[in-house]
Image 1 (spheres, rainbow, N blue to C red):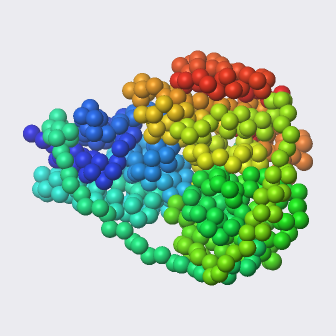
Image 2 (cartoon, helix red, strand yellow):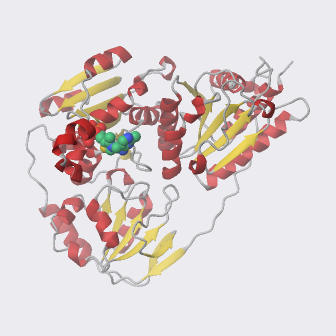
Image 3 (cartoon, rainbow, N blue to C red):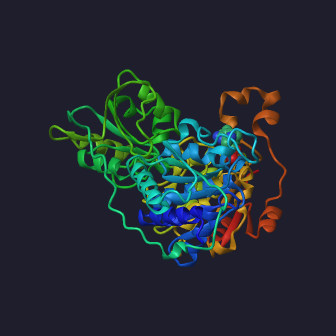
Length: 518
Ligand SMILES: Cc1ncc(C[n+]2csc(CCOP(=O)(O)OP(=O)(O)O)c2C)c(N)n1
Ligand SMILES: [Mg+2]
């Protein structure tokens, strides 16, 4: 006899697959057993890629990486209780970066809530505003048709996530019997119509004359480049914007602003795409009363208007008359003149250069929060690369996991996924080094810039607090990365001179590369 829970789970997952889900992540548990069995059946039949993790926090960040890189919703399955809470950091990041995650959290049925039952808490409000929507779903029973119930739920969740990418929680109650061997989910096929999309677009037509620059933050994408190229505007693109390519990109924009180059003083209008967070000088432009700010809404990162000064917040922009390309040409010229001489020392800027040199079409780069992404913003060349970074909330957590998730989204290709992260960022997510052998071979390099703790704080106001600095800000750790790599079954390379870096970046498989800065 098939348990209602099993019928429901098989049909729910089959519906989500029909809606484009290609990856399911799960961590073991009892309450979620029908989902786990159905997921395994689907994976064995080759209908979905299943990834199993023991730590739900690691799992959720890994799923986040896969969703970021694949642009498709990814399913995450947990049991009840603290397991659910461990999804919270990644759910928050996904919320602020518009990453589609379907969080299937298992729960006790209604009669066991609020009465002290084991592993039971209020899971429905747990994520607060980080979740776009919570479906609180009653336990499957014999009294209803679980097939259509599961399909309707799956369809509704997919439609929501297609219109508003981000995390959605399906809180699923299950009652005993919690599973059965039938039905086999591999034999369940569901047909789905395309989701109904909300197509409303706000459009602005701008005068051409003001001297304009396009600022592209995280989530800006190719639309920023298309606009800049159509109207002859320079573009200041952060490394993970997806817009740092093409003839209009000003590679040295950050240092030109920091050096108060005279051209910067001529800027009259800024058009913002995505969420720019890396440079204080860029933020200062938004607050500058002599600069008009026009904001283009980002489907993933929402609209960005930190100074509350946007003259318009729109979806698309056009220009009313001919534009003058002289402005762009002046920027291009100073950008070329501003190139620095390249030295051979093991400096942060040279690490960035070598990493960008080694990374080509078909590879992916993941940049951790903190210092190295800012160094990349300053020194990275203009190059069309797939670059990901958790800029929704810019946490240093979950970065090894995110990179693994990105690599898993690309796992059919020969390319490399490279993460460039700080030492504390690496140690924060050591659990992300755990390898699920079923994930297969991955070309995944975690490049750890070991500068003895949180060096980013040296550049902040807190550096003046000399007595407190090491103890409460820098927080240097004494962990041996070689032993760490050994323990988790990763290859290890130690880089102490710049010329050792490029050969290290050629190694296939999972490699932890420790770059030691003196
Ligand atoms: C989860 C989380 N906790 C704390 C912070 C605050 N924070 C920002 S940068 C940083 C230090 C990072 O050090 P490291 O990874 O070594 O990078 P470095 O700046 O030294 O290159 C910390 C703790 C954060 N962003 N996210
Ligand atoms: Mg550091």
